[in-house]
View 1 (tube, rainbow, N blue to C red):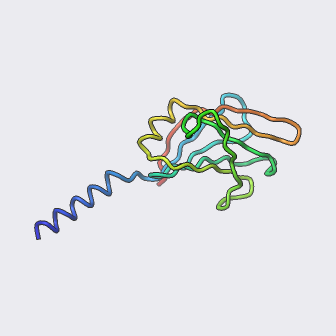
View 2: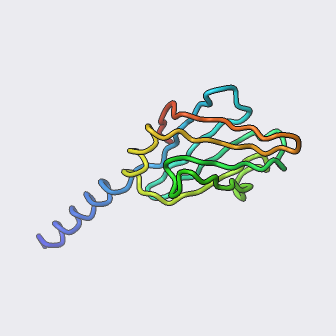
View 3: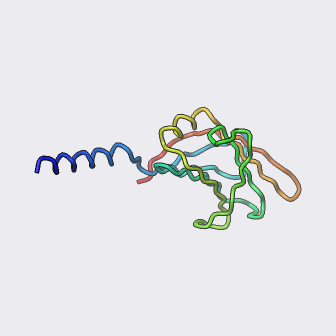
Length: 131
């Protein structure tokens, strides 16, 4: 009986200490950017989201020192689970590594429109827990 109780206590502690609650990180652009950047952060998945695109046909690329190749732009795809005006990019990374990197690595978005290409840099402004 003592072994079962000990195993249950250890399982509860392990589950409490290893998984983090889902939360989001908000970013602000250095200059006036037409879109907001947010990261939905769960234990091993990070979803970079931009909302309210003026033109859903614009191509959007994302780059950061957080990613595997920090010099490469990655394509943000149209979101399946959100509105048409949302684009997303998903990475798999554990919370500990990710949270060490986000405060020192800005995120850069490159928006390719029909007539021009614009680049915006974003820095993290706050973390907020999702209740």
